[in-house]
Structures are given as structure tokens and as C-alpha cells.
Image (cartoon, one colour):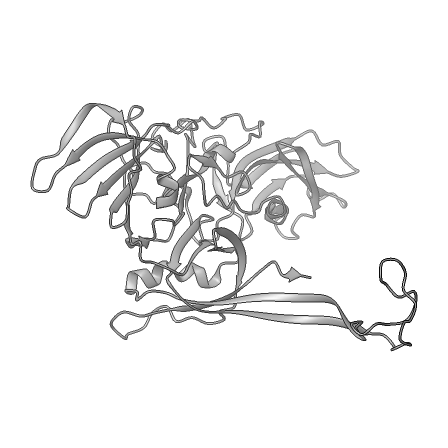
Amino acid sequence: MSLLYYQAPASASEDQWFHATVNPTWYTAFSSNYIESDFKYDWQIYTTSGNISKSKSAPRIKEGLGAYSPNSVLNSLMSYDFNPTITTYTPCPNSILGYKIKLQEYSSAISPTSIQIAKATALTVSKEGWSFLDNMLLNGTESFMTDVLSTQKVDITDYATLRCLNGVIKPINASVTSRVNELQLVVTHTDGNKYTYYTTVTNPYYNKQANTDLTVVEDMSEFLIDIPAGPANLNSMAWFIAGFQLTGQSAVSYAKPWKSTTTPLECGHKYTLRTYTFPYGDLGATSKAYNFEIDCCLDGIQLQWENKYGGFDFSRFPKVSAKNVSTTKSTFRRGRDSQGQNQNSSGDFYIGHDDYDRGETVYDIDINETYIANSDWLDAQQILDLEDLWSSKNIFAYIDSEWYPVVSLVGNQMIQSTRKGLRQYEIEFRLSNKIYR
């Protein structure tokens, strides 16, 4: 009797393997007992909560293989993490899930003893062909989990985050270790002078080791983290000043950085944000940098949306065209009775109507708030940075200092064209939570 995995995203040599949940992830196996009339492959999913699902599948007719995808169950346990105002490294517990599959044989004709176990980690990623190595910040060339590549023009009050995989994903391979320990902020003032800052608080989840034991299911939330990136986030954090470079002069570094007593960002500044490994790992190792330009004349609405990597991208639509309110009223009409005559001590009629009583009465109002917002003039790369917005199912708008979940009403949007020059985009959306009275 034998039971063997043929296909699984995890094995003894790849003890932590990540996969997306948008499409089926197949586990296949073979048992020599598949010829028994009532034979089934018994698949069981375990998380940190224990055994959360059991499923039996019949062997395929020709080769006797068993096949199973856990993604429908995994998706029911996952959602998304929206952390717009964070000021430190923040885990994403709803966007990542560690689990194991326990497989055994089932048949009334045998007493199965063979058990196979595979362990993997699922993420809310929808990009086809995604590999977890794309978003492990290893050698300075990998990316955060974002589609934004252009320099982002932001308001001083804007929030933003960047998401990445964190820790030592495969402990047996020491090279797969994220470089996400500190944040490095390089700020260019309007006079061209540059100042370099480092966060006073390091990543508490840095160098976190994944468990190599295939039988142990662990909480993976600290292996996926959000990092603050917007001006409003960064100005709420504490920073060390590590050096400066005045225009036309050589850079100066402090042997011992000192704590800044002011916020690092102001109107008109440009800044570059990246992760940095000092004092751990390779000295001075940095991740890919992301660039921002602060324009304090931006009005309008900031939008954030879940992208194909499971993180949140962002943009400001500075030209708001309109805000509309539509209502649906529910009423009832009552008959007109006689004019009331006698009143009680409170001035109310004992019976009958007065001059202000309504015949038709509104008992419920359903209110929809709809916005139409216009982008600034965008170049080709900025247009591509907005691509996930038009298809995202999780969009949020920052309106009057509050975040609101919204639903895009855009059905069709042109992304690429042979027409040259800048273009402007319009988005119409409504608040997803209706107002009732």
C-alpha cells in the first residue's frame, strides 16, 4: 500500500511556499488502493484553529489520481487589510494564511495507515504568474506589492502605505531574507538641499524565521507587513537625522545620528522612501526606492484601492466635478379625520388632527451620495499606475478627514492609446454604505 503526493506547493525541500488564491491551487496524489470500489482520497485542511475542513474525492478513472484545490475554503477565511493611517510596521493578518493539507486514504475494504502532509501559505494575490520572490526585498531590485512606478504627486495630508513580504521565508536557504528593518527617508528641499533620515523604531518582525516542521501550522501574519509611506504617516513618526548634502557640496554623514525635533516633510519637498537593513544583515543594503512630490495646492479627494498584489495603491484626484445626492422615499397615507377640539395639558388633541398633521407621511429615506472626480493631467506611466483602480473591488475615499468605502461606477476605461500627450481621467463612485433616515 502506498500514498504519495504528486503535486503540492510545499515539500520537504521547500518548507514555506506561497501561492495566490484567485485561481485553483492543485494538490494531486496517487494511492495503489484506488481500485477499491468505494475508495476516496480524504483531504483535510488545518490552520492555527485546527481542522477547519474535510473533503473526500474519488480517484480519476484512468490514472487513479486524486486532485483537490483548497482555495474556495481558504478564500472564505481571508479578506483584506486596509491600514491607511499606520505609523509603524503593521502585520496583515487577513491577507495571508498558513495552512497544511493532511491526506489519507478512505475505503471500507482497507485500514489505511499512510498519511501525507503538505504545508503552504496562501495570499490574496490576483496577479497571474506571481512569485513570492518578486516581493521579497532581497537585492535592491524587487518591488513592494504595488503597481505604482511613477513619482507620486501627493498632498501634505495624504496617507499611503507600501506592502511587502517579510522575514526569512525559507530558513534552509539563508539568501531569501527580506531587507525590511529600518526606513530610509531622503528629503530634497525646495533649495536643492538633501537630508537623510532613519526611523527611530526598527521592524520588530525583522529576521522572523518560518517554521521548517511540515506538521506545524503557524500564524503567518507577521510575514506580510504594511509600511507607512505618505506624508501624513511619515510626519507622525519619530526620525533620526543621519546626514545632509547642501547644493553643490559633498554629502556629510553623522557618526552618531541625532533625533529630529521637527517633522521631516513640508510643502514643496520631494522625498524618496526605501527600506534599509542596518544594523542587521548586509551593511547598507537597501530596497528599491519610491519617489514622492508634495504639492500642497492639491484639493479634491484621495483614493486608495486594492491592487492585483493584495496591497493598496493610491492617488489624489484634485479636481472634483460634482457631488450628487439621490433619495428614495417610502411613505404612507392616512385618512383625514375630524378636526381635534379638546386638548390635554400638553396641548395635544385627544383625538382628531390639527392644522400641521400630515396625511402622507415619510417613514424612510434611502440616500445615495455619488461623486464625480477628475485626475490631474497624466503621462503614460501615471495612467498605467491607475490601471488596477478601474477593476478593484475594494476602493476607499478620504473625504472630510474620514475614510469611506466606495463603489466605482466606471464600466469601461481606456488605458493605452496611440494618441500622444497627457490625458485626464474621470471616476464616478458612490459611497458603499447608504445613509438611512
